[in-house]
Image 1: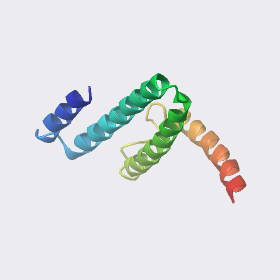
Image 2: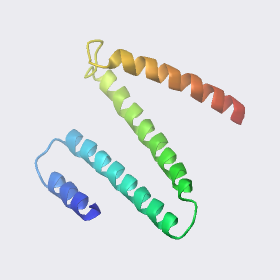
Image 3: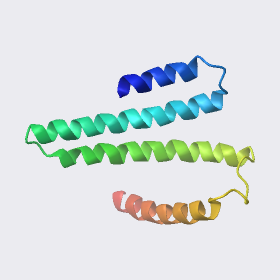
Amino acid sequence: MITALSEAQHLASSSDLDARFQAEFRCALDHVRDTASAVQRWFEAHAKSRDPYAVLLTLAIQRVHRATQLAKDLSLDLQNMDVTVETDGLQDLYQTIGQLHRQLEVLCRRGK
């Protein structure tokens, strides 16, 4: 599967696809590769009678990095006016980000 993903990335890179699509595709493939790698580590840990749940921490770290990148990309979309008040799902995103912000605020205050 990882080989097929690498081939797909090479194909997208070598085409005349817009750079924004190439970057988005590369990020999506990186996410799939990271997840596939975590699944592989899960099975390896389980087979060696180790705690496979330790791999879940890896997934959480990956989500934090991915969410950070998505937030940066979305911020650029807002600046470029690619996202407007009419964009489907915007209100749901607003509420979810508000909830996430409140949870992060509590967590970060505890960490000080």
